[in-house]
Image (cartoon, rainbow, N blue to C red; front, top):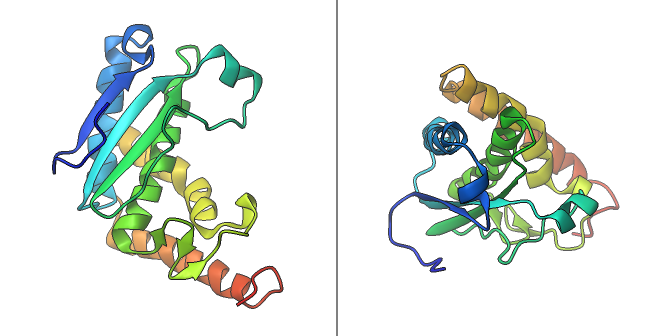
Length: 179
């Protein structure tokens, strides 16, 4: 697979997803990806890879491993989403919303590798990473926007980022981060 930038947002169904998902699932993923890009006002290229969850991944529900991990870069974000055809479509599209929030964070300039707003967060536990708190806390809302055919107001998007800023600033004042 070629993961290089071509300035076009694309979605690919790979590793069995192309056979196991129904046409309705494929259409929903394609529509949701386009909707999330518009809703979050993401300007840079985002490629989405939808991969079937293997039997090995089912044994380790926390596993996010894939043959290539997601990459979030300003010129070309590559999002990888696992799907299980037995899972509810809403849940699968919520996972896509979570990953799109990360692409939005990159687009805003807040997330770069393991740096948040220029602060190295490589030693921070997963559950305290500002980008994960923001994504987990808002993935359901962003997915609901798709299901209700709504685009969130700029004020709501600002509310999301302001809330993350409050958390991040409080975190900087704790011993968890050595600044």
